[in-house]
Length: 339
Image (cartoon, rainbow, N blue to C red; front, side, top):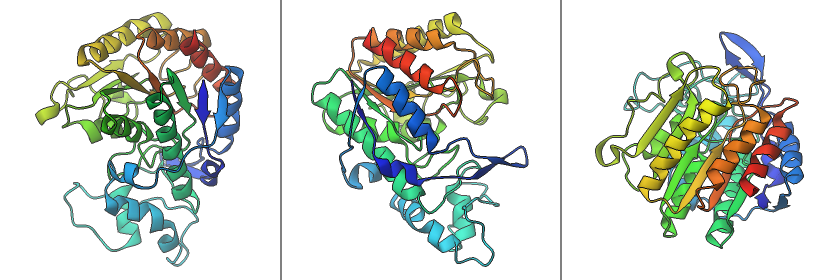
């Protein structure tokens, strides 16, 4: 299987994030690239450089106002006296239609949903090339490959059209799906990260041309809390084109696979001819957040079930943070994909 990565994805090196009122070490570190790359190679992946598709495919989903913010905010932030090295908001608007401030602090609050998406000097460059990896993997599938893997880091599924969140800045899976759509395909996005892909849902919620399916720990007491509930089915033209499968905390392999079958059945009924898999590995039983309890062999079974659809697959890396199991879980999943 072909795999794609650009060394400039290392440039985003966040030091901290805030959770439960505490300033914590950020788990979305550049070393994830090394661990994931080793895991992909162990599954037989051959890495190649990403192709630069320019800003157009990114701007197809993200507002120009937001992209200007991502490109410029760190330099502007550093002009604030005694500003920290990372952009972390301390105020948020109560609605997306609120007035748009000129202040760097105000814009940070407008465009960053939470305190888990700090922006440093290298964030824009890394996020840009993370999206290019996803686009290049989509190109490989358009060219006839049955599957391709994008080591997209930083991840993307919590990023809305004009809003970063949860370690995510550009919605790599959504960008890949939009690219496939514009090249004549009928894509579905299948999100298997332990957290709901709220940004992906938000981008496509009113659309009928891309199906979004997400399996995740029930958000009633789990991030992202406000999205990912079963009653969220889409709106307007998109009503019925979003399927959330919130799962009880601690669910294991067998029950997970039964729910995955329901998601894959919906993808078949949509008539998809390609699946973009938003590939989180943080559903593992040893993940520190203890959302779900998928075993390493369980990831092989998940990959095999997705592969059994017979549809081409664009595999876009989402979550899964530094641990002894991370690389092995990716190897297991890709092994299931390749049979």
